[in-house]
Amino acid sequence: MKQLRILPEAWEDADEAAAWYDKKGGRELGDRFLAAFRAQLPEIVRFAGTYRKVYKEFSRVFAKPFPYAIYFRIHQDWVVVTLLWHTARNPEDLRTTLTERDPGDQ
Image (cartoon, rainbow, N blue to C red; front, side, top):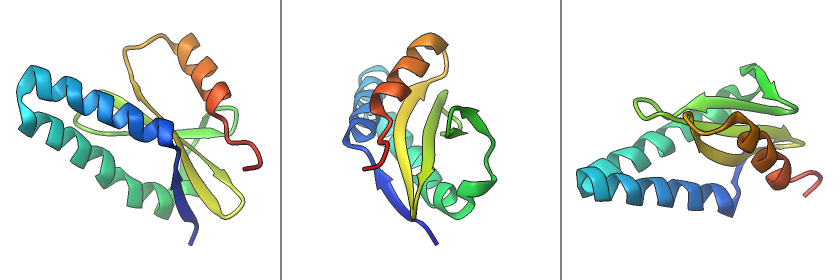
């Protein structure tokens, strides 16, 4: 089984989104968001090679019921979670951010 690596920027994305949900819906909503994000991580690792690539080498899953997508790629023996992205944001910005965060051969 592959190992999981989550880029620090992806954790920052999760923290920012949770803070927004805390502000709008109370702490419980932010906690539910983080739980939805974390719940997807074992599934990403377990089924990493089965997800369709959506941009370059990146695949995605959704942090349901929240409107966020988790972008990741397989790199050697690792599944690298690169980005947590609100689905209403500009797709051009998404591509730029993924390219900037691409871990390459790290």
